[in-house]
Length: 65
Length: 538
Image 1 (cartoon, each protein chain N blue to C red):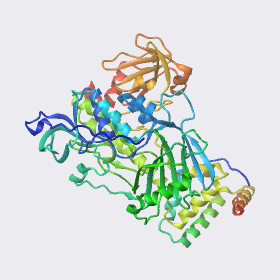
Image 2 (image 1 turned 135 degrees about the horizontal axis):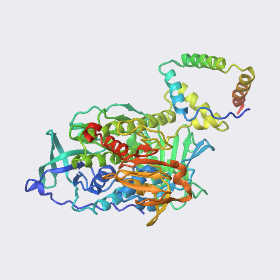
Image 3 (image 1 turned 30 degrees about the vertical axis):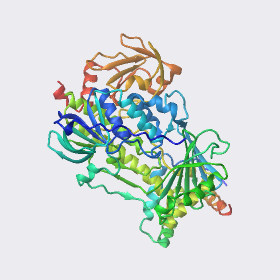
Image 4 (image 1 turned 120 degrees about the vertical axis):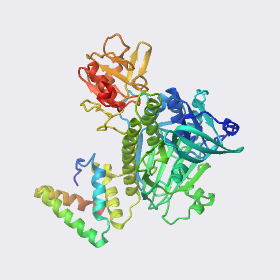
């Protein structure tokens, strides 16, 4: 598991609010689909295969906590 | 010991038997906002009559968290030091998830400030101190308890008020009507002004308990503790604060459909508190079940009627942005209203109170709504994101910053508004004074004590200040024929920079900065801050 430096602040509340707003009015299934699309788009923006593998491993690592 | 709610005397007002001369200012409501307003005006020589339908201070602790900027304003009004002495000083907020601490923030990590990040002090003490202070101006502040304003009519150049008392009704006239009558403002209701916004369905229980042993456990240092999903209150949130007199504030989120009346009974509340404090003995001092809204008026100024504090805007309590926002309203309006009444500025200056404070209030509403949304997820997806943010926050710094249990009140910046002359400096025009310790001709002092109250030009380091009528000048780390101070531990120079002059408005906000201030430039900036166009000034 990697500890990542914080790159969202000081705009973290703006981001979180935008994310919640994007889900506004969607069914739960539609929200999961939105999340899936968002992960894919963000992955494309990140691009680097090594970083992506590390992010996936870290996120997956919390599934056992 | 429980607070002694001694009633203030009702005195039959003169208006019952004869017509009163027109008052310059009528202030409706003798809560913290109305009282602070009267004191601010009194210090500028403006008379006011303050009317309240009640005759005791706030029942229950209500507003308890007073922010640094508020304390600096209260310092100018003459009650800051008394509040600081009585209040509980804190600056650390800890956030817990279940049993674990996930993130702590320090609201004032540096020293060299007269006032701390926050003090906790019950609203009844604040009102008591303000009433004591108001009584220092017996000829200027006319404080009338059990005087209930039941009607008002804007006559264009004054307002006619009808007031009910235990001895019957009377009328009085005032040049300006300042509505400080709170969230349920009767003034606003009478005028039929729309007051709609986001209403939150969640209910919260607020309970003050008195106990000898601290519920913070071994931690004797007062802090703000917030729990997401605490073991003693599963699935909800909880907040703990310390107040003076061994009184602790507990705030618990309840179910959306909880019965408010039933929840505010000892049978329901005592077990909830025991779940937190265990077997330690305590006394229940006050409790209340509440919901809240986030709303502001479209316009704070309606002709001769001006809304100040909760009558103009209400927020969720998470972030301490209600009372602290209201005191900044007072700070903004006081000098402007005095300038207009004393013929130094046109009425247009009053309009800038709306511009600047509506902006401050929108900022408070944005922050407090976001905190409330984070604390009370509305949909399964919101709950999912919240719960994963909490999970990640155990390790990941970015997720710790996402946790939002209230973004605590910070002073509002007025950057970009018309009264400020654009400029670049470490403290940009629009921002409020940042405090620093100084030593001067009369011993040690603080920057906030020297720059608040009137237009003040301050030279830091090698810069020469021109002389202008009605302008106070001081120098820091320089020698001149006006009062000069030394920046202790160099804090002031580090915070403001060297070889630069700052012009402060009477409310302590920077309104212009100069590398080489000329008399004309400074005069123009002062005129601009008084909403006078340069043609008028010429």
